[in-house]
Image 1 (cartoon, one colour):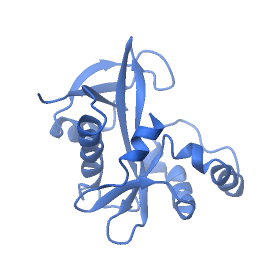
Image 2 (cartoon, one colour):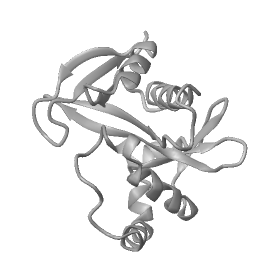
Image 3 (tube, helix red, strand yellow):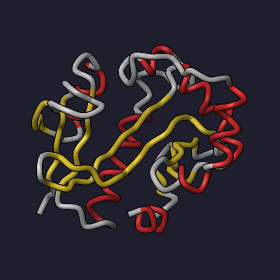
Amino acid sequence: MCKLVNEILPIEGEKIKIRPIIESDLKVWLILEKDQETQKYLRNKKLNYSDKKWLDKAQSKIKQINCSILAIADKKNDQFMGRASLVLSLVGSQIEYEVMVILSSDSVNKKSGLGREACQLLVEAAFKCLSAKSVIAKTHPENERCIKMLNKLNFSFFEKEIQGIYKDWLIYKRETRS
C-alpha cells in the first residue's frame, strides 16, 4: 500500500497539492496537533509530551510517517497546511481504502473548500490510480462540516463504528462510478 500511494504523489489540485511529509513540515504539524478546534473531533486528551520530544520522534520516523500520513500543501508556495492519508482499513470483514483530511483551523478559512479539494483528490486517486471499488471516511458525529462535505462529495452514511479507537464514529462510503 505504501509504495502504491507514494508512486502517485504528488497529487495536484486547483489550490493544493498532496505530497510526502518533509522535515520542514513538522513544526507546523505540531501546531496542528495542538490545535483545540481541530483536535476536538479526534482525541479526548492533550499531547502528553514536550514539543521537542514530539519533533524529535517525528524526525526520526519521517520515512515511516510517509507510508501513511501525507502533507496537504499550498500549491503556490508548498507550505504545509494539514495532513491527509489514504490507507487500507478494515470495515467489518471488508478491506476498504480510507481517506482522512485534517486542516488546521488557523491555516485556512473554514469556507475555503480546501478540505473538500483534498478529499476529492484522494478519492479520485483511489479510484483511478489504485483501482479502489469504494472509499470510506470516518467522522465524529458532531463534526457537521465534515458530514456536509462528505455528502457533497457523494459519500453516503454506511454505519456507526462500534469498536476500536474511533468507537461511535460515523462511517461514510462512496462507491466507484462505473
